[in-house]
Length: 183
Image 1 (tube, rainbow, N blue to C red):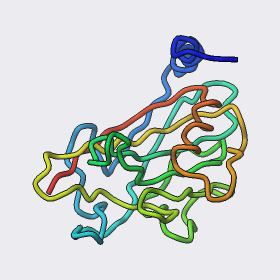
Image 2: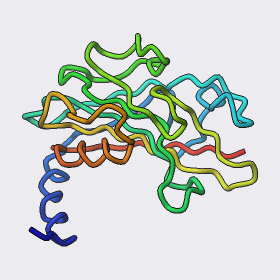
Image 3: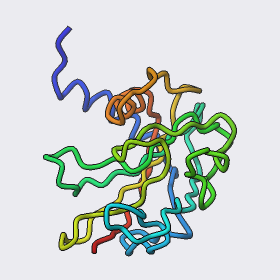
């Protein structure tokens, strides 16, 4: 069966509407504000501490069975794909946030059962902002997805784009927060 873009718009519209009061916030990053150096990457010329920020969400829709959290830089000069900085899936439905520093390589600060997916840095943990020197500030979009499934069934080694596709096929609602960083 061939699907066109209109089919997907009709499919996704109810998920967006189901969000109600679903929201994402952070005591570490204000909407539209500059991200602190503490959260910036510590390689590729970045001089930050590479600590993942604290994130909180509230009022997920009825039927939420898990959450996924992504951080994406749509302004990265990658030929249009942007850059995936962090992907966490299988966050339990009762969770309402991730603590600052939860995005370590061992994932010890994540809720039980949550797992990190390999980012565009090539590893499965938080990788902070690190835009090219001289670029205007990039947008770092944190998005929490309320999902109608308990686990995201992705094959081992799945790319961020494939995991994003699977998440979006199971989304009930989503909420975003955007911080800025340039150097």
